[in-house]
Amino acid sequence: MSRLKIDSISHELSNKKTSAGVRFIDVPGDARHEVEWIDGCHVFSSNLPTLDDMPVPEILYQLPVLHPDRPRGSRAMLCAHGAKGRLVGLRPGAWTVTPFNDWRYAIFPDGQVGWIPKDVDLPQALFIPFRNDIQ
Image (cartoon, rainbow, N blue to C red; front, side):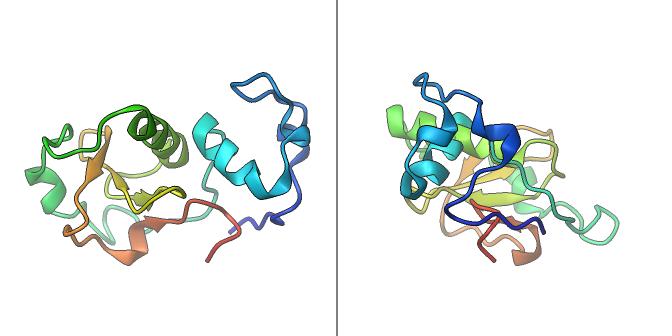
């Protein structure tokens, strides 16, 4: 897994501007991971089990992608956008938790990212932490 220091920033990201127009290098270190989440510019670069080794959890075939109990509002939109950025390019079944709260998002079998209730058990082997420097 790639490891980033909490107070450092990748060269590629340092001159990129946030959605608020501020360069990432100018964002305070203690808030940077949240800004990276909101802007969806944090990719996961480790390996997950293949679909042959671990199939998509059955529950994801049964849940609607637009769950009726999903959070709504501006915070929910930020969290969903960040989750899509974090899970981009990963296999169905991968899931993450937002850095702001305990909302969970997963990649459904059709490739869409959606909110999942807390009582749904998903394999820990498919969990993607919200930052690369967290194990």
